[in-house]
Length: 466
Image (cartoon, rainbow, N blue to C red; front, side, top):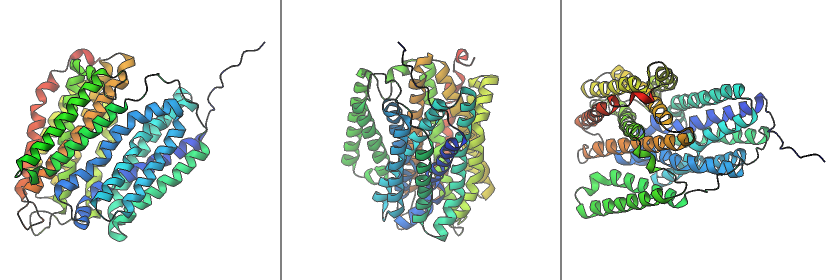
């Protein structure tokens, strides 16, 4: 009698990896089109600065919620199957964004597009399933690099497309590319069998409550300038937010497999890494939001009157710095330990934000300041993920890094919304141009918060650096 053996995964060639690379390029481009064109979108859709800030972060919020669910569904149903369905959602979101006549519809499209954040981890799973260890590392690096390259391409091309054709086409063109590369992945990538599920299922109650928490938080921050004069409305939003946070915390503490394991925060290395991640991402998002707005302010006032195309070129050095920061941060953490890297990144960010508050009268001031902040962010986040991952058991690595992911999204969202609220509050009645002092306030606030986190960075335990 013979015993049936499990069929090993089918080894793939270069074509399926190339298809995943094309998908990474197209999703990276689609993800990045909003940032350089945000001032243009605000003008065409008559958005306030607070509404513009909400538009700039809603995709990331959706991505933070989708990623853990996508991973578990990939285990149950197979990575390729889940990836294709996620991309169908992304294409629907791109179509909605391309046809959007107003802000609510555009926000809906961005929410759907947020599913793309789960695509990169699923691509890595497929590569690891179908390639030997050495080749899979190279393929993962290639796919990651192409995603970053796609982001740079989107940053550069969004402005010319929006100004030369229309804002509709800047969403439509990368969406077409996503659809085409998805078809290639479907045809070229072999079907992978479901991996063994962990038996715990998906924490749907926790996911719903976390969604409610994030949406309510963003709504509270976005409407703060308008509701400040209506304390009952603001108080009601704060009560709803507190209720969501309380319910979510209770559910996550009892869940067998929580979306975010809050018990992990009891470990000093993890909670310190989360605090630092939040602060660093707040500082980064302030610059990400304010710098394009400052470029777009009329040259007759105190800005530079830059269009979307020029803004894209001005932001390119920051995108390059961000792409280099990850590898540099990883090498630095391995060579010197995570604490020196985090302290260096935090000091760089605080100094760059303070410099932008004092010096923003020349284009190169903003270009250099934004690039330094992007570099500092990459250094810090890479080192903090390393710190969190190496301070826990191997089996808890995903939980610890998941906390960093959620904290990162919260930091970006809060920083952007606070920046938008500051500009909204600093815009004189009857004017569309915020006072220059509003930008200064935003940069100073971010610099101060970043500097105050230095004692936590210096207190990181040396034991996790090895």
